[in-house]
Image (cartoon, rainbow, N blue to C red; front, top):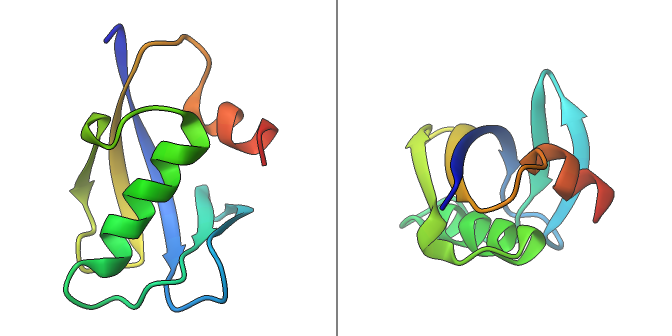
Length: 91
């Protein structure tokens, strides 16, 4: 991997579907369909981001916010473009 980036995310669990909503208080707001219990929403968030960005799940780790709606996600990437820009453009 060439670089790492930390993405600030605000997660809304128990939503109808997984989707990127946009920016919210300096974070990327994402709706996740799984409940926030037994790590289900966190796992689904990582899977969703992995598909959105096109990187394997092993490249993502939650640095903070395991039990919170506000999270910091460390992403190991092999491209120079910002992760936030890549997500918003592909949305």
